[in-house]
Image 1 (cartoon, rainbow, N blue to C red):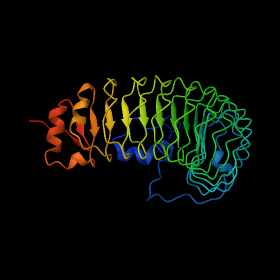
Image 2: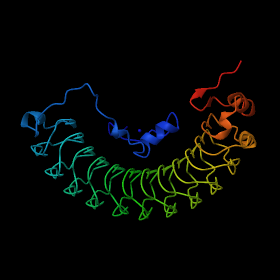
Image 3: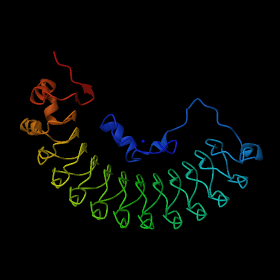
Image 4: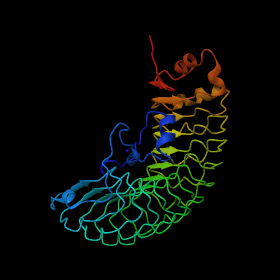
Length: 339
């Protein structure tokens, strides 16, 4: 999903249902909820006692109901600061923490990205589940490798072109309508744009290193403009308006392809994907058994989801699929058992 103690996507989830819940909120592992039976520590500010060891490398102030960030000025070596699940409305009083490498402000009430200019060594920044409307304030964070902005109110991708070291970008569950302004992110390997209002796949030719791409729960009606993503390994486009499988001719490194919950009636144009291991086609409109036979070219398939397609109503559904694809290990959510 974590190097930051909570971040990094689960790149090979257990099944289509799990991915729809995590990848569009795409899979920000930093979104793990606290134990429901745990009692939060009540208090509205960080005290001197909380930072008694000025040489500590890590501080955890998660779930403290903090209203302000303060009393951190004496920290000399701090590298990881966790402030998740609080009541913070503003990023403030962190300019002295120049040694910081990870800063997590997940699930607060922050509206503006600000006062981060001095954190030039920051590598991981998590501002998911806040109230941010605009991407900005990142000008000096040129060492940033992972940026989490899931579940905010952002309407436009902007002001990140200078982040040359960025590898992981999470913008799921915002108000984006266009994929744009990604030029310069030549080291980006994971891009999550699920649960937005995007209507077209475009402007990706500047991402030659992209390996994981999620566009779940958008308004995509056509698979296109993916030809430059020759290193793509995982593509998630469930819950859109796709009617055909197309445009994947150059994506021969794909190991996971999620096309579930679309309007696709034919399985085609995947026989060249010889590395494909996970193929999710549940909740589509497949009626023809000949479509299953077309998957015989994909000898590396481990898992296939076809449930809730018309052909899955056949009483011999599982037996027919397993006879056609005898190397499968899992069909839908059930492991394949053979005598």
